[in-house]
Image 1: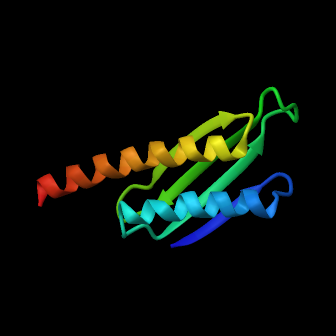
Image 2 (image 1 turned 90 degrees about the vertical axis):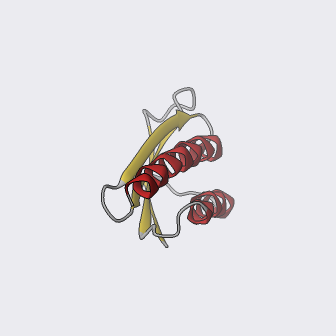
Length: 99
């Protein structure tokens, strides 16, 4: 799976590694993910409002999408990947029931 990270500011190597690790782990739940686009936005520059992490997974059929805002990019990424994991489970159960 190809992981593309779009960001408004520079990320540390450690943060980039955490994002890649969490996103790549989604492949253990669904092996047909073609690519993941990660968008990291700083809401208004203040740490109080934090960062918004949005991830769009390109899969056959409709793409999956989730977003979360947190002071920590790592925590926001964890929340988004957890939401996508739930969407993947729902997507898979829907498609195995129709097969």
